[in-house]
Image: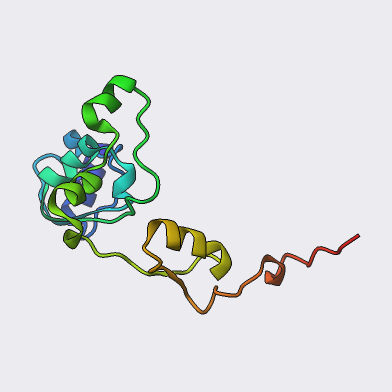
Length: 148
């Protein structure tokens, strides 16, 4: 019954969400998809991207090669090139024109963001107006720390 339920879900799904480490070729069977979107593609080893790549007509690699790389514990695997993601390898071999950089961030105060903007993003990163001047003390569950 579980196999039938999984088959029905996969056969009728318009969107399939999975991790690259949990994507099982046996479960997918011979199914093909129009588009695969691999989120955090820079944190996945290249072989981790192969199953979705083989199952789709188009792929979108979403991620930031200036942030966390794939976690590779084996020194031998790292020496063989598995420390680089597919995303990073494609940018290195085909050039930066194959990617699009998002320049607005929505997570942190401008002063915190400025370091990474300067060091990693050619000073192109800007903070959205909704977070640009936000302070932790302004959050509902926080109160300003008082000096002693």
